[in-house]
Image 1 (cartoon, helix red, strand yellow):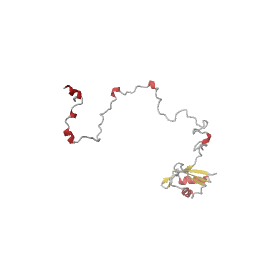
Image 2 (cartoon, helix red, strand yellow):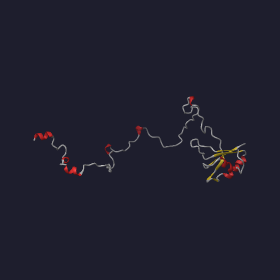
Image 3 (tube, helix red, strand yellow):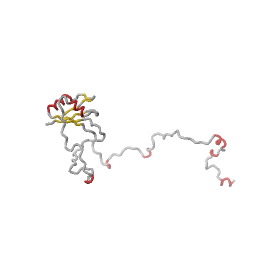
Image 4 (cartoon, helix red, strand yellow):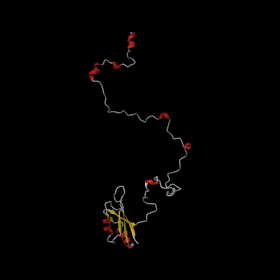
Amino acid sequence: MAVRLFVGNLPYDVTETELKELVSPVGAPLSVRIPMDRETGRPRGFAFVEFSEASQAQEVIQRFNQQVFKGRPLVINEARPREEGAGPRPRPPASSGWSGAPPAADRSPRPAQPTRNFGPDAPPRGKRKAKSRGAKGERAPKKPIRERGGGQFFSESIDDLANDQGADDVAFWERESPEDQDET
């Protein structure tokens, strides 16, 4: 009966030929398979090596487990069978009316207890304690508003300022309007 081994912690640049050469002193493997990542096209960092005899597989585990290969310690153990439901499912054709959600029969029931405990439940909104935010009048900024500098300042030339007869020195409401001049 064939025995399949999982070889983990492989460098990403390793090839099936190099891996076959590594284990060949113990015995010739039936197959060597390095899974590739679908999105990047790179190897995923592990491989499966299949031997025809269990004794050869045990010898490979004893001899090469935790041995450094291309600068990385290998992890070699017997491959576990794939769990039911693990791995990608084949997608039905788009014309079948499949919406993307698995059918109700395929869904696993939710566990009765949550998997993580985030503390006690919060009280209902009406029963909560009032937060101490202070009076509404205290919502002003905590520090003075910083004045921005570095803008451009446009001014008249010095000659124009010298010829100015002080029209800007008087507030507009104190200036004489044409109506006021008529009264005098």
